[in-house]
Length: 219
Ligand SMILES: NC(=O)c1ccc[n+]([C@@H]2O[C@H](COP(=O)([O-])OP(=O)(O)OC[C@H]3O[C@@H](n4cnc5c(N)ncnc54)[C@H](OP(=O)(O)O)[C@@H]3O)[C@@H](O)[C@H]2O)c1
Image 1 (cartoon, rainbow, N blue to C red):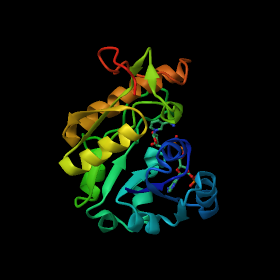
Image 2 (image 1 turned 60 degrees about the horizontal axis):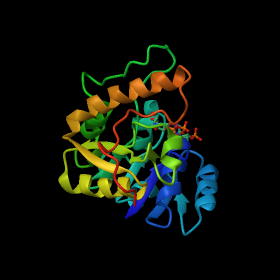
Image 3 (image 1 turned 135 degrees about the horizontal axis):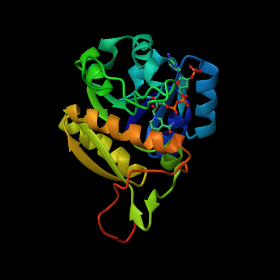
C-alpha cells in the first residue's frame, strides 16, 4: 500500500516505524527538512515532500498533526478534492488538554472523523489508532499479559476498512470493526479516558483493556 503521513511527530514516527518495509511510505509536513529527516531515518525508499505531494502519492493518507491543525493541513494539501477516493486515516483525538477537563471537542455535535468526512465527502474516512499512546504503537508485539492488543476502528467504506484492518495487523494488533463512522464519537470519548489517566500519572503503556478475550498463542 502507498501510505502518506501529513505530520512527522510522535504518531507518524511510531506508525511509520512499523510499516516501513511493508508499505511504500511518504512523509510530509509544514517543514520539508523535518519531513526529509524522518524519511531518512526510516530509509528503505521512504519519500518526503509537500502535503500536496503526500495527498497525490498516498492511497492511505494519515492525518498526523495536532487535532486543531487537521483542517488547515488538509487545506494545505489541496483541499477537499485532493482526497477524493483516498483513504483518510484519522488517528486524532480532539481533546483539549489546555483547560484540564479532558472532554472531547465536537463539531456541531459530531465527531472529528465525521467532520473530516463532511469536509471531504469523496474521501473514505476511517478512524483507528487513536486509543493508545504513541509508544504502544512502537511495540514490536503489542501484547499485554500474553494477549494481543485490540485496535478498534470504524468507517463507512467496507474496502477502506479492510485495508486499514490490514495496517492494524501490520503493527501486530488485532483489528476489531466497531461499525460505521458515527462510532468515532465513542472512540474519541474513550481515548479521552486514556488521556486523562496518562496525564494523572499512569504509565505511558496505559490502554483500555480491549485485548483478546482469551489467552491465545501469539504468532
Ligand atoms: N501522541 C500520542 O500518544 C497519540 C496517541 C493517539 C492519538 N494521537 C493523536 O495523533 C495526532 C498527532 O499526535 P502526535 O503526538 O503525533 O503530535 P506531535 O508529536 O505534536 O506531532 C504533530 C505534527 O504535526 C505537525 N503540524 C503541526 N501543525 C501542523 C499544520 N498546521 N499542518 C501540518 N503539520 C502540522 C508538527 O510539525 P510542525 O510543527 O513542524 O509543522 C508535527 O510534525 C493528534 O491529533 C493526537 O491527538 C496522539
